[in-house]
Image: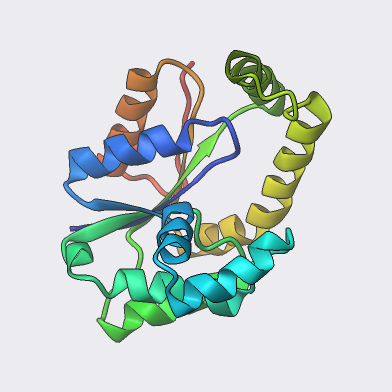
Length: 198
């Protein structure tokens, strides 16, 4: 049984790897983006509240996000473990997640951070933007998103390093290669370990 969190910058292939890891481990992948969309689409009280902020282009407050995650983690399909993607993003959310898991006597087993050089990510995301016709994804916008990621995750990553449950894997390379690196480090954890493609 595995309870884990995956963290990675835009363009690191985090979503793809999350799907593959959950399939290999037989645990459900939980994306906070999916939780938000499901609540908004279903017009749940939390979804209605979140939409007010989203429509104004504002961040959804921790209180709303926390409740959505708490509700999702109370469902039956997480009984055999889970892979959480996109939460927690702040140290306050780290504490809230701890409290959710502690209620059932659980805690996170591993935090996986996919790493990649910013320059490589910019090149990858610009290529993706060109393929999909997303003219709004300029180099300046992409670098801003990467700066936000680094700023958001630094304190969260530090928390998990302190606990000895963070492992880093190089997210660049062929999809299968990255998956193999990830599974290798999950099976043989050396916290904090750094597994690169070189």
